[in-house]
Image (cartoon, rainbow, N blue to C red; front, side, top):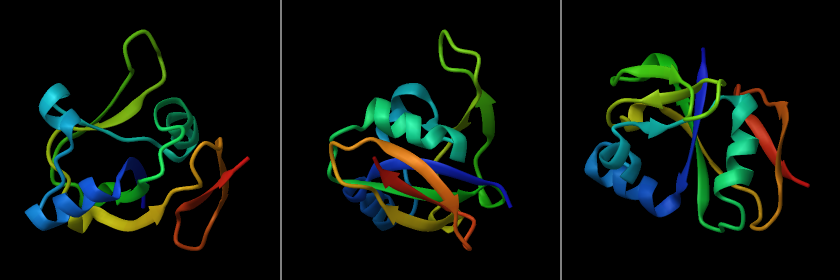
Amino acid sequence: MAILLHITTLADWAAGLAAGAYRPASLAAEGFIHCSTYAQAAATANRYFRGRQDLVLLCIDEARLTAPLRFEPPPGRTDLFPHLYGPLAPSAVLRVVGFPRPGRRVRAARKSAMTTRRYETV
């Protein structure tokens, strides 16, 4: 089972649950939802979300996605990131993990029994 990760706020995730599908602002603005692999998530958190206190990490089962998924490079880079081209069905989310303390750097730790990784502050 391939797991993708998405960083969001608890409020935005709760709104998506209430609406029956998660549609972050990036879906309307860019046409897709930004996701990460395990290897990319810590760097993404440190680059775009450092200092935030209201974050959760969605652990998404790639096999349960109902919208198209493409692995594409960001502008000016060659590494490929998962982009979901449509709303995220709550049934595709296996686990919602609270994110580390604000203002601290994040690094990936070992995998747990649920095939998700823990993220620790350093």
